[in-house]
Amino acid sequence: MALAPAKSPPPREARAIVRRTRGRTHGPITRLMSPSDFGEILKPFVFLDLFDHKGAPFNGPLHPHSGIATLTYIAEGAVSYIDPDNVRGTLPAGGVEWMQAGRGMWHGGGLDKAGRTRGFQLWIALPPELELGPTISIYQAPDDVPEDGPARVLLGGYRSASSAIASPSPINYLAVRLTAGERWRYEPPTGHTVLWAAVASGVLSAPDELRHGDLAAFESSSDAVEFEALTDAEFVLGSAAPHEHDLILGYYSVHTSPDALRNGEAHISSIRKRLVQEGRLDW
Image (cartoon, rainbow, N blue to C red; front, side):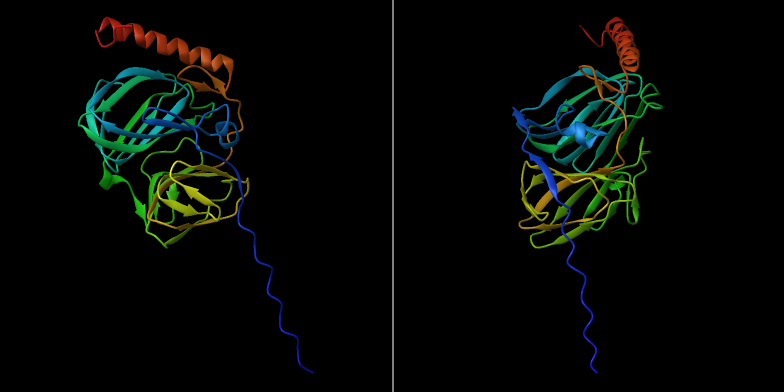
């Protein structure tokens, strides 16, 4: 008697996109994520700005942070920076600025040259054990940012590549470039149930279509996502274990409790007084 052929398992459904946005644009900056919207469902990722400046150079003012870390990635052009120790420099395309504010710090920056500058700035909420900790400043040149295939590892690790920056919690943050027709599959680490992607240029299928300026939040799971470039495309992707803490907001700060916010803002204020005395700040 002939045996019936074995049945193939049913095809697995793709990990669904549950929310998407194009954010709010003010001048050259589009805020794709903030704690009052996507940041609440994607924390520890709490703010994400896509910037695209065309024009004259400028100097940005010194400003404070506490309770968070910021990671700035330059896709095109270059930016200048002033770190908490008043060290100045330039970050070229492909470079990374990591600023872990801890209890509080001030920094600044701008553009040294006219032309086009594009990139992303991400804010990450710190866990309680680090939100009132020391400040850490790291600047990585393009050659120091590790790669695996089309992915540059800005934070965390992916396959053979790991960032030299110590992540404050289980987080991956990647910048990916695909040519038209190229496919790339992201397998998140165990426990990384938070996942999102934001498109800097071009058009992707994931499998829903995503275009330049789109941010997509994927359903909470550990499933992989496959991306296909419908045109040449650039995007950033974040995955993480959930941040199981409240987001208590100040103007430049994010903390896990009102007491921690008061501590951070008091420290920021004390630094401001010193900066005024040193002539580095006039307000």
